[in-house]
Image (cartoon, rainbow, N blue to C red):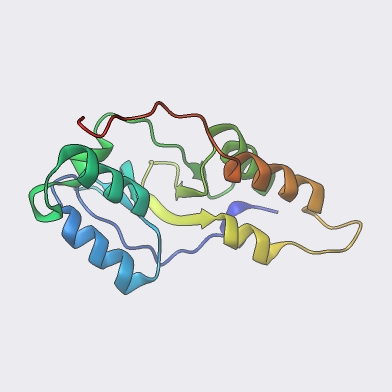
Length: 157
């Protein structure tokens, strides 16, 4: 099964200079937990998650209206898949990189959709011979939902 059969194609996006306050409101208005960052040609350059916004505000000690998408996603690598990629490739990317969402791009790297854990789960068939076996979903869910070791920050940082 191709990613384009599972992805959501109506995706809100922002530019690198969009304020985090606006991005948070976009998430609220679109009932989503991430907003892809694109350039003037709609090419994917990053992604901002709800967690990025919370951690960015806490670590930078600034209000959301003073920070931009660039200030929290900066040079961080963004993982994505193509519309014609098999769903198994998307699952593997989510699993390896421990992400819950993947932007979907076309052959010119332009944003055309997004696929989330929820989208994958909603498309799964419980049948024994399904195109997307439940054990693959379980492995992906385990990888992206497990507790990750991160360095502790001191209260005075």
